[in-house]
Length: 158
Image (cartoon, rainbow, N blue to C red):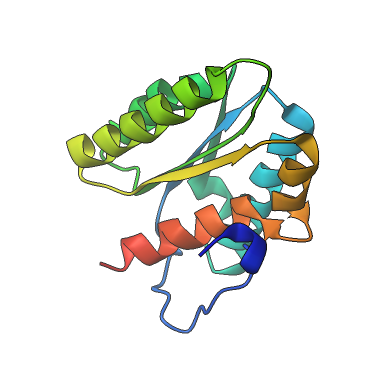
């Protein structure tokens, strides 16, 4: 379903597992920091709200969204890490750079998750405009960081 038809921060937590002993790695792109900080805050608040311990949440910054893949791999390789949440914002510009970045990140994160057999969550906001991005990082469509944290919790329940 298109994001414009739902709220990214609305979810059913009735089937969530106990995450009090789970360890979460967050990889956050520094590019578009005013937006990615909001994604990070949403993800952390959601994890804490559902029982994660603050000391079990590890946050690493990478320069931009393209670097999320290596950042995810560096965290996922640690056996004690249960899930990795990757957060970034790519806004279409005058060139096709966004297509290349989005595809590379999606493919890379999928590969990392399969390689280490653990959830590696794609929390990348990909929009045409700054306004659309703002709507998805705490605006009228909720917060993609919340959705990414919820996805990590749900995947740990498998």
